[in-house]
Length: 334
Image (cartoon, rainbow, N blue to C red; front, top):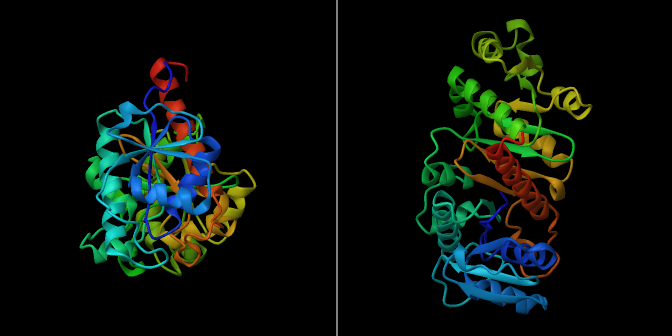
């Protein structure tokens, strides 16, 4: 069995760098992909940047020819003229949302093998009346997933978040036993999906020094350690809770395969510090593969032709790797 359905790439916010990095990435390696978004926006950015690419409008992924140096666009939204670059736009917010929803529908129908999403802007979506805090929540809702988790990965470390887009105050309340178990299980599944037979999962503590035996908080004793023990009883190689300020150094040295972080910044700062150009976001728990670059819309440089494509290229490579692993698993190869 080979990958027959193409990968979907969503255009991202049309006022940001999404269309630019999509076009430049597909100029290098666009075979086996279709873009969900706006033909008008993609055609405009290709012309603006002087790229030697053909932009072709198609009705659906099944019409994709996968020809070199071409972008095949499934018209997922209605844009008459390209919106202004470099600023928040309700038109761009709506268009980015429309592209995600259309790509998810195609993935659920088996018309695409996975989804790679270009950056969106939460303020732009809010200005269009769309009340989602980010990609992950949209994908979970429209994808029909009961529980999802973000895995951020680069060449050195991988991390899965217990809580995602919420205030730190709320994150502490949400990091309960069930959330711990879900994150540890998804971290284990994510590691296996990346080809690690028995992932070593390190669970970070919530408090400084992982609570220092209860001196700085008892969440580690009351919640996190029992979840680790329960996960180990299920056969998962989980350990901890480890101090959040040193666990990533240990993972980078090869001691752990995946670190479970308790809240957004605890997990994302180490990954992003090592370089946005190689960071990738993988959504675990969905019924289809989804990856994205680990950066935002960069309004300040939109349309100038200087946006780096490294993170999107890495996200595309990860998506292809995950799809290939799924195919091999179905065939009984792994």
